[in-house]
Length: 520
Image 1 (cartoon, rainbow, N blue to C red):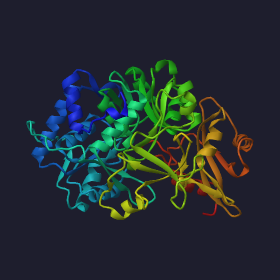
Image 2: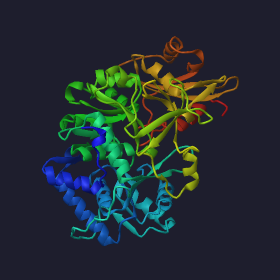
Image 3: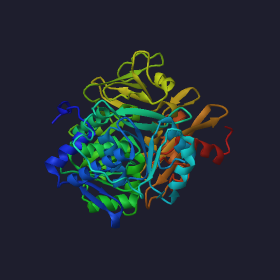
Image 4: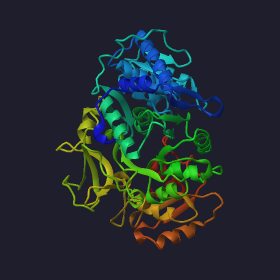
């Protein structure tokens, strides 16, 4: 099996194929410990077809835009697959959005319908939707999952006109602009990306894939739900990520694959209930640095873990290790692009840089978005004059074409004229035996312009002093990279984390400026 084996298909056709060929196999396990829902492929297909018929009876048709505003559960996935089967375009909404942000997304994406859970994590989604709806002139249907859809019978014509190059998703992503941008992705963008990434991970139909990521994020849709779907594997998911519940679910459901970023894996391994003897992980993927990857292999036992890099605008995966790559390459985060995807490292003048030199990662190929929906100005800015997608990320290429992502260009700060990528300093701190998580930002300094500031959390049962960690860094990296300020914290929840488990560096910088009483 190789990436080249992929044949362009629609989401509905992929699901129908598994339902016909192995309908009794488990497709989805969703929900908390005492209320888990289990659906086989035939059951999932039946629910999807009935829901698609209900969407049609409601008044929706191919090309209409449908928002989903709820946590990870069987309703989210059924609605997404049903909308795709009918030919509608799904607009996933971040469950941490407030009413104004919800209204912006519904309006910007020209949503005709929104489906929502009345409450989620104690938040009144019903009230938020009612507040947002009057600001959205194209919104016709406001449907609570508690109310359901009109009863309707599927027929053979349902979705017959849907094509692989039809739009599948409008993925809102943050970035350098004040408002989220809606990345337009097709069936083939996302399904082929899932197939290519899953092939590198070595996914098999008998795998049980635990998903830590929210479905409104491409890590949860393409790289979790659709990876499981295209290979006919079972996906296990929770309404939201909590390390203790995740460890329990992975143990009870005998999960063989998982995924996440540095923060998620550090939270799992740092939890009091963490016991590698209770896990059966073989692999999966991680968007993480070498220190974390080393521990995923040695401590969690996921020996075939693959290192992934991507962004929403690329469906999202650009490069990922092959599970058969030597361990040292995977730990180092060195991976090749997918077949048919090109990567270059560009300087400030957009010229390609030689191997080993750091610059902006730029991408071209079948995985690149069609553009930002309803936003031609930002779409134009996203591409170079010769058609390459600007990622805004800093990376290097080896002589044999392996990419290593170093960090976000916008996170790079200058100390007395020297560029510092936060990931470089974070790796030094993570190498300390007591450190569980490390986050570094640049903060203002009257003499040098900016200096490094670090926030770290410690592993359970470990102790370290702040000046000890600064001394550790001073022995292992250039002076201009050593944190001037360092704080040990219990966690990053109060400071600011995204729903996908990433620390929000902008909020962390604001917090540091206030805490250390710096001049902004």
